[in-house]
Image 1 (cartoon, helix red, strand yellow):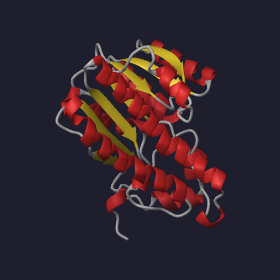
Image 2: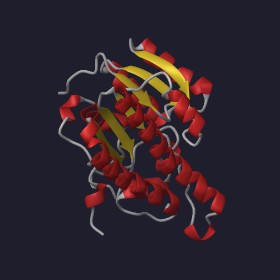
Image 3: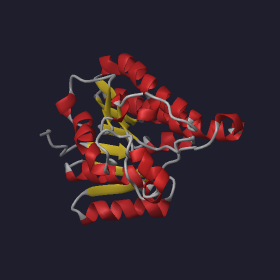
Length: 248
């Protein structure tokens, strides 16, 4: 469906596992040379090994998005054609008891970290005199709230609005900035919960009555990463099985 990504370079943050690892594999299969970024050296090397085993090109990049120096270093060797801003953490707990430290940790990773990487990516693209695609991974929690996710929801809502603001400013440079907003996607980290009674109850609230799989995000990811979306910027694509449009 989409133009291939041969000859393109891509950076995926938070690629130590989960969706980030999957995104790196998807882009590599499409032909991109992928920089696999994350905080844990062994985990990102495992992602690289998996990408290479499937015939793709990958290299590890140690990157903590809360560390401005590490973000700058990730782009010191030049820019990328595609940046997938995926690094993030979640905090599940009542707003009444959320500590200042926990609030700051989530916002610094999930919102400020996205800005640091997007800004560095855009500066490198402008410096190279070329455009590119930045895909910020948000969430349906940034568009509609749920209980016990105040910090995470606030950060993801900020990512959606940040995406629009950067898209507006950077369009003149040929830089497209869009957001991908997944719903409930099954990963190794949440599989046990969704197998529980409480997890199954949540699944029943999804109109399609199922969890999403990482592969359910592939089409949207490749659309936004590729030139197939050359006239799209400042938008969000939701992939949630209809969850956002479910009745109140």
